[in-house]
Each structure stands twice: as structure tokens, then as C-alpha cells.
Image 1 (cartoon, rainbow, N blue to C red):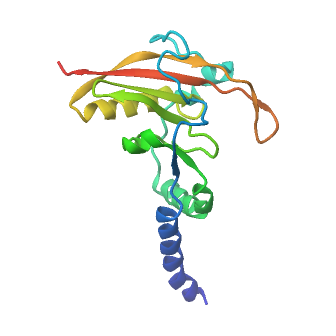
Image 2: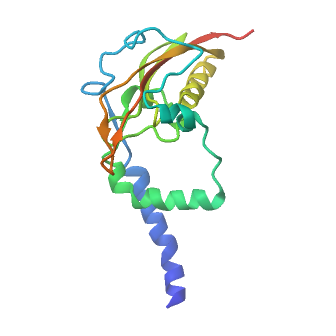
Image 3: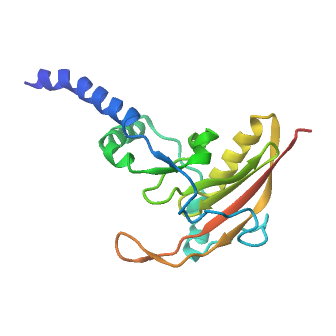
Length: 195
């Protein structure tokens, strides 16, 4: 009986992996109806390059939103793969920004998808610049900067941070019922010639 379970395990894993990789990919959505619809880089006021302002003081003191992710361990990667496969039906309901997806920048973020609203989106881009909207609690400034660096690097240019501006929307209720204060940010970058 034990041997039968070991024989079935690879087949089950392969089936789950196939389902999660094809049928349940996040849905690219347009900006219409999203909190970043019709925004541009000046919508939240003047940008600052020196200080990122969080709406919830706990976010700025912990620095969690801007901390880089720890590299995954082998066991952690395996657990994440199983969790992803098990959560595949939910992923079909997840949303990702259509412009972020079209620019092939989703891989630069730990988790660029959300159930109601994508946590990060591209507001505009040209050959020499890119502007992101992001929910800073879910997607930190370091992640957005990494994506901007990848975008500029494709045209063999360097990335220059032009600053961020923030907005504090009304508090929302979290899963536990506690008030959650998000920080919405617009972060702008220039692509400049390498020295």
C-alpha cells in the first residue's frame, strides 16, 4: 500500500502543476475601475526622492514593505510549489495589471497579483521613462525599483529614481476586522544613457 502511494504521488503532482500553470493563470485587467485609473505621475502631488511617506506609521517603522525577500530555501520552494498548486482555482480569480503583464515585468515582483485590485501597475512608459502605481504595503519601493531597472536595462540604459508621492485612502477592514491603512504610491523612473 505504501508503494502505491509513492507511485501515485508524481502523477498527482504533475496534474496539479499542469493545472496551475495553464488553466489558472492571473487575469490581466485594464485600469478601468481600479484605484489607479486615469492617474499620471503628478496625480498625488510633488514627488520626493529622499523620504517615502507611509500612511500607517507602523509600515515605516518596520520597513517590511520595502525589505527585500529572503532567498527561498529548497524546502521553502517545494512548499510554495505545493501551495501554489493547491490554490490554483483561486489564482484564476486573481488580477494582474495588463500593462505590467504586456511589458513582461511581472517576474520582477514577488506577488504582482491581487484578488480585487492588482497591487502594482504601470501608469505610463516611454523609451526613456516608466511610472508605477503601487500599494506600498504589498509592493515595496525596492521591488518597484528593481522592475524599473530591468525595464531600463532592456534598452541598455541606467535607471534613475525620480521620486515617489503617496496618497492615504480610507481605512479598510482586514480579515480580522481590524482597520488596515494602505499607502498608495506613484513612483517615477527615468532611463538614462550609461556613462
